[in-house]
Amino acid sequence: MSALVLDGKTLAAQTEAELTQRVAALKEKNGGQAPILATILVGGDPASATYVKMKQNACQRIGMDSTKVEMSEDTTTEELLEKIHELNANPNCHGILLQHPVPSQIDERACFDAIALEKDVDGVTCLGFGRMAMDEEAYGSATPQGIMRMLEAYNIEMSGKHAVVVGRSPILGKPMALMLLNANATVTICHSKTQNLPSLIKQADILVGAVGRPEFIKAEWIKDGAVVVDAGYHPGGVGDIELEPLLERASAYTPVPGGVGPMTINTLILQSVAAAEKSFGVK
Image (cartoon, rainbow, N blue to C red; front, side, top):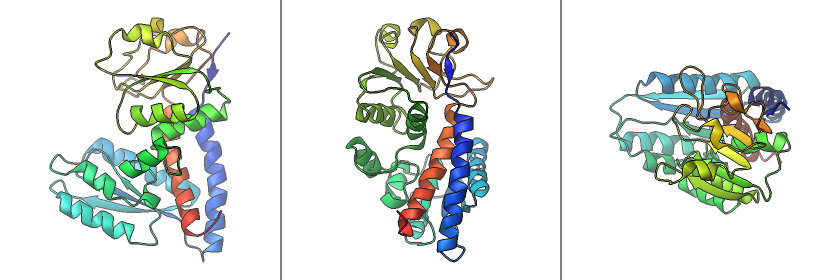
C-alpha cells in the first residue's frame, strides 16, 4: 500500500487562506494597520537573502507588512543589539526574525536572546526554548513547530510511539525532541557521536531526519510502517533520508521538496499573526 503523503505545501496554502482573513480582521480593528514582521539580514550571504525574501513574500501574500533591516558584513554585536532593542521597543513591530547565520564576529546567541519573548516568533531565544520545553506558552522554533502542526493535521498518533530524532541542533533537533516528548512520545535523540545508529533508527515508529547530510539515513535502516519526516533539503532536491525505496513501505512520509520546507515559513508567519493578535488584545 502506498504511503500517506504529508503534503506541507497544500497545508501551508490552506493556512495562508485562514491567515489572510485573520490579518484583514486585525486591520479592520486597528484603523487599517497590518501586523508587521521585522526581518534582520546581516551581511550579504545569498542564501540568507533568498530565505528572507521568501519570508517577506509570505507576509505579503496574507496582507501583513514586513520591515526589512539590512546591516553590513562588518556589523558589531553592539550595533546589532542596538537594532534589536529598537525593534523590541517599537509597538508597531509584532515579530522579529534575525536570519541565521550572522557574520562570525557577532555573538549570535546574545543577539537571539535579546529578542523580546513576545516578539520571538521564530522560537530562537533560550527563554522561549525553556518555556516550550516546560510546555508553557511560547512560540516554538519554526521548523519543528511546523512538523508538529503537520503531524497533527494528518492525525498521526504520537502518544506512546517511539520517535527517533536524528540531529541535535538548537533550532531543529533539540526542540523537535522536546515537542514530541510533550506530545507523549518516547523519544530517542541521535547525533554524530551515536553508536549503532541503524539499529536505533530501526526502532522508530516516527523518524525525523535533521542531520544536514544528503540521504545520510538509508531506507534499509527504517522499519516498515514508520512515519518518516525529512527535514533536510540539498542540491538535487534530496533530503537527509533515502526516500524513494520507502514510498511503498512507510505508513506516511514528507516529500522533498514540498513537505517540511513550506511549513517552516508558514509557521513563522502564523506565529507572527498570533503575536500581533496578542498585541492588539484579540483572543
